[in-house]
Image (tube, rainbow, N blue to C red):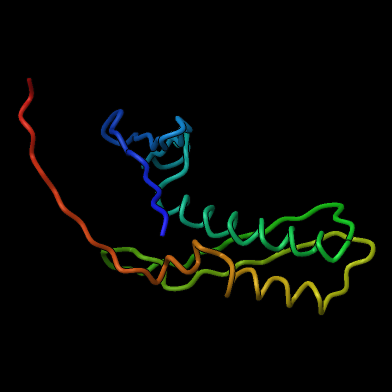
Length: 138
């Protein structure tokens, strides 16, 4: 097993930064448009699942020696009306522009990517634990 970690630090009431041990920073905010400058945590969840599934899908198509002119995935989440407003459904629409890829093979690659190889999609089923502590300044 390997561990990963990030530290999320408050910058202002509705602004946060997540930093990994390598120093990569992701800005997070909870503002509504037009004040929004970064993705919200729920946006980041959609970005993470879309990004994770994309990498595997592209690599598998390249392994099949298919030419990729362009690739994208649109990720849509439907949220619960109550609190918490979790995603009840997430839909990923993969689009591949390729002169030599076949529809059936791309469908299989997408299914494998999302259902078998995407760690983020699998993590949505994981057990969450937590702890807390209060520290005194100084």
